[in-house]
Length: 231
Image (tube, rainbow, N blue to C red):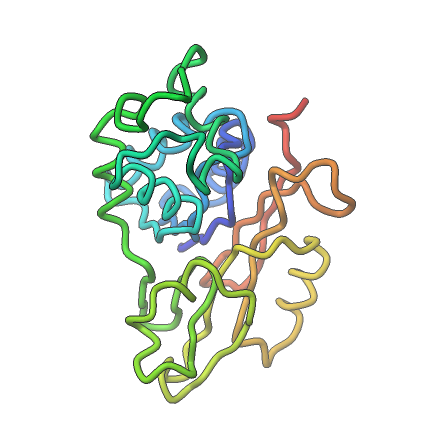
């Protein structure tokens, strides 16, 4: 079966536990990720390593999140991290996962191996399946072609669906953390055509967050685990 996993933000232990729970009930899962693999949590490098291995085995597909976009922008222009927008959004934790002694005043190309940049740079902004669209944040249906307007795909907070463009398919996204109880409410609504699966894994200090969620896309149920990276 197919499983879509919410924003991970460098929480490798929590991700491994969730995947382990999935394998306990399904010996042949396929994984999809809504982006924001990196930043804020303790081990973004290991998260990317795990997902690279899954993709090599044709077990996973991933879309870009806004945190990956900030990293790519910093890398593309070879900026010093402390002078970038990325620095304000958790970049340091990502860099330290590659090298705990990293000098963040160096250009980013000196701090992250090229193969990681190449992997992330090749990720799509969205994935269209027979029954779902998977995107990090959402689509701008006011645009003449919402599938080319990429800023909204990683940054929007407006949750909308427009069947003219999506052909009746459900949109799965992350980006905006919500309590897992709210995700359950979404799943209990038979008319739901937008599903937010970001239960704020990295935000353990915020009430009702600190959980990583996976949506079983075939059974339309959810699995989730509490963050264990902060223990």
